[in-house]
Amino acid sequence: MDVFTISVEAYEVVAHILTLGYAAMAASLLYFILTKNDNMPKYRMSSVLSVVVMVSALLLLFAQQRSWTDAYEFTGTAYALREGADLFTNGYRYLNWMIDVPMLLIQILFVAGIAGAAFKRYMVQFSTAGVLMIVTGYIGQFYEPGRIGENLVWWLIWGTISTIFFVWVLVLITRVIREGKKNMKGSKAQKVFGNILPLFFISWFLYPGAYLMPLLLQLGIADYGFSIVAQQLTYTAADIASKVIYGVMLNTASTILSQEQGFEVKA
Ligand code: RET
Image (cartoon, rainbow, N blue to C red; front, side, top):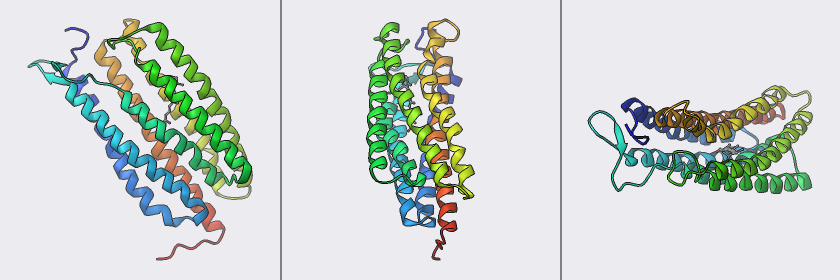
């Protein structure tokens, strides 16, 4: 088998995982639409931004799945790159993040109760850091081991530049969650809101982890099939945690806060 030939199992697992990814976004899209009015108007923008995230992820993860199935053909015993077909690319993901990362970072501000000049400042910093993190990572992924233009040095340099902006995002989100918790003093929502911080750190760290998966290939620890399965599995788990579970936690906090402030859902 040459490096780009993969086993039937590896091919199928990736096809299934990518399908799970966009199916989860479709199901969650309905959840965020249907639960929006359980919250007071001042919290509803968080649900609206979850809807924006779901629609963009649904479309782009669908394209990602098609990119996978279009790139390979069955040879009778395994899957090989199809003659003349587009190569599989993670590029769609990065462009999806360009939309979703600023949305995910801004939506928490509405629930945290951050307003006025502080809101504007966080919004600008989150958008700047988030977009720069992704653009530099997008450039880097063109050099990933296993791709035609592979170049280990450029891959690691762009990855490192992206990490600097990532650290900036982590500093800001830690501050926002701390401020939000302070604003929720005495509320039952404080616990679920506070738990967003560990979820955020775990789920967002999975992305650079997946970026580095081709190192398994580079170091001879795994073949191309294994490294791509590990990478797609990690990206999908990260997507479900950072968009869906995060959104559900924010929605839960908003609903508790709304009830505590006397908001009643009209039947
Ligand atoms: C890259 C490049 C390598 C270095 C780092 C990265 C970080 C990516 C992150 C992405 C988060 C995406 C989310 C998407 C949700 O829709 C770009 C992989 C640090 C943190 C949350």
